[in-house]
Length: 289
Length: 145
Image 1 (cartoon, rainbow over the protein chains, first blue to last red):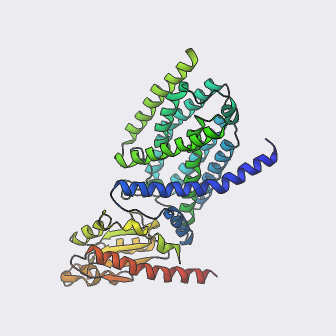
Image 2: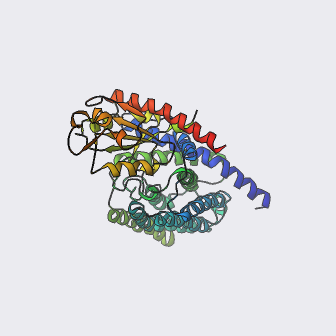
Image 3: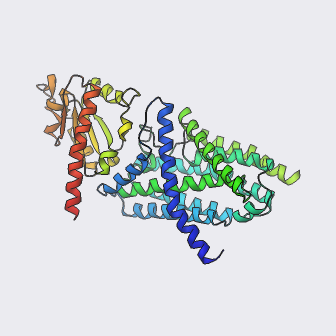
């Protein structure tokens, strides 16, 4: 890629991803409300929330937490740019993990015990979904012969029934990564959980706004990964990929509303069982068939 | 219009209520009243809350808790006293352990009387609180300039 391509991808992602992410978050709350028999907030409610956070007085319990949260936002944006610029899938996953690490550090740096337990649970959640993400990358490599996102797209080997195990594992891993019930152990947008607001308990004002915006970026990147499974570079498959991503997102919302929160032991077990059964079997099939 | 009024997050605290008003506060979240229509979320976190809903009269044991909750909330913030006990102490006002209404400890912006206060009047009180919230937000913005 030339320098100009990089700048264009970076700008388009930095501007469009939060817009789409914000609307997706609004759709999430609307569908959740309808599933509970309520009207629900306006579609743009997540945007109003973030604007409100910016209007509030800034209270920081620990000076370093704003730095950590800023780094989280930065690395989530970099992850998305790397992914949509067609770079190495492993690099994307590792950068995403680095961003995640900054969020956990931020939660640990604030004094609240709720936040600390939330950070601890987020580490378990990371242990649960990281193997799934890595096995997904390995499966795509075995199928297409490359870890590079652009090579995977142009390889002509996708969509393929051969990576269906990795895809299903990824969808379940997404529930953990997006912190949807039953895996919303560390923090949740639902009211009154055992950990109050979990990792974000001590965050308010602009810090909380940064976390919300990071989620918008992150969701778009993760849904991009869903679309990657059937991408072959044609416009038709791109559109189908977007439709598939939206279906998966609505499925996640349905799962979110249909389940109660699990303990972290169960979340970890489910993550690893899914990774081992679906992911490893898929790798074995790709290697030996 | 200030965005604070479009997404007011509520912190609900039971000072020494009989739970009558608390049940009515929670009733506001049910499909029948659905306050999330207005972007209202019942959060448990004072640091993320804009409106403090207090039910019940304040007593010696929890006056510091009420003060601390109020201080932990970032500006602009509004206090709504729900139910007659929170407004004035109600029938408990002469008890030896009761200090009186919430306004004996922290400044109250909106009083919602009733025993128990009906969900309609609680929502009405919160909406009145939004006007105060907007005023406070605008004042904060002007002070910044």
